Length: 113
Length: 112
Image (tube, rainbow over all chains, first blue to last red; front, side, top):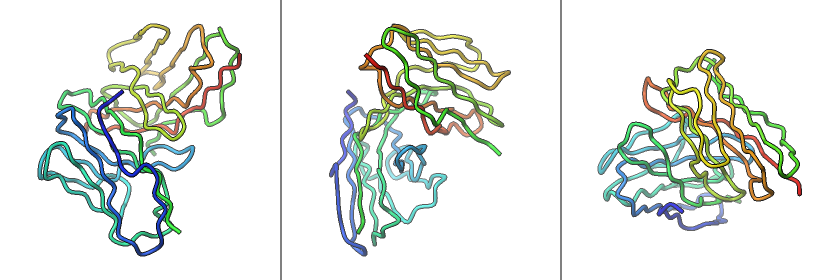
């Protein structure tokens, strides 16, 4: 089991609320990622980071933002949640090796009413 | 267009038989191809990686083949068990930007 943690596991909130999804890893990995996944669909990369103070947007357009102040912590924030944000959010990390094998957290299932 | 295709229909296999899953891709030049297992409500778990210059890789009951001419990888589970039931994802690591591109996965059901 990988040492990567996400909280909360489940979240139901109303439209317009600000939320932060937490992700932490204890493996000392420099690379971290946020993916969005709907049931039966592929993972879509929404943000990634190659290290402290490094953040990039992924292929999927997202209204979320991320920060990377510490190596182990990579939170994702939605300033104003909408029903279209309802999805599963998965955090992952990988080391600096060239194969980019990724280790995933358990995910946060977000429902916006 | 660039895409990765995995069979969207669930694969039903009798316990003890070999399960074979397919991953096809178009218009990519992968440096590596990876296979992951995902259980319902959980994040994917890495299983095997195969490089572009490798034809086959094995790990216990798992075997992966990679044919860059056909642009296809096959994932085999021998002596399948009900505990092998899960969704299996393939992912390509592109040699252009070292980003992982994911397939949607194939659901495997092993019946006792």
